[in-house]
Length: 333
Image (cartoon, rainbow, N blue to C red; front, side, top):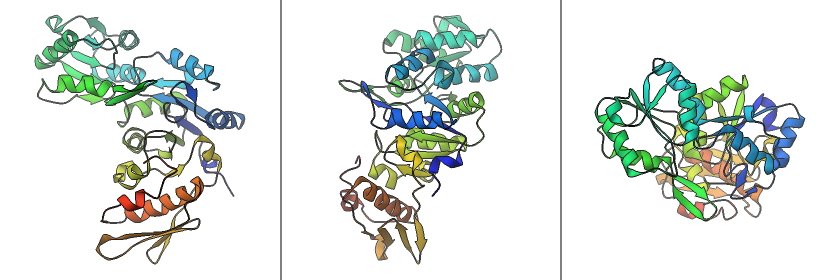
């Protein structure tokens, strides 16, 4: 049988939750990416993080055992630079609320950084900065209120750290949003399309698949960019997230980890209202009751059952799913 990945000429990877988690690589990730390289498939590492340089990201991946070089990494800072070239004239004044990496990309795009709103910037460019201060956020809010356009790298509400979860770029963005009347003029990171569009441009891929662990950023971002997606269960999103995914957040296929790309695509065929995937069967009864008849002793059996269930749930209105979700004990909730 053909492997899922055989239908694609490139694989775009999210990082945290797909390739690594905390200080180490996720089991199967290094071997899986290595198999892709051995088969000649183009790989790109796509990150919403505008705080780190692409060289820093490549070095991090290399230390973990991945075959990664700087041109293989695409960041929201790069996508922001491309957006600025399109939206602003050369040498436009820009107030940057972000790290030195984001500032460098703004300069590379031909813009002139300024310190505050009294310099009359044409735009505020905002990305995550662990050293962000309230006075800098104040300057951004004042500039937007005085007519500056507002461009944001990403709106991830949290960031994973070794000791736990911390506020992310979206939290800093919301601080300014509370003071201004409108939201950002543009957001380049996932789930919006510019970042993946930039990865398409840099890779030259014609039929890539995006491999991610989050419905709300990775899978929705792939939909926005018009490419297929593959959801893995080694990171953030779990069974509940898949079952309740909006139409624009439903993956093309699912698998346990990166190595699952080399397995046949998981398919749920539906006949007479019954969805079948492997040994699993799911169907919808009266009053929105969903029935699942499936073995769930192994990860693969749970993935088959979840895919059959998802296809059924996505067909119409259903009742509560809590009891069904509770059966997927080997997958993230």
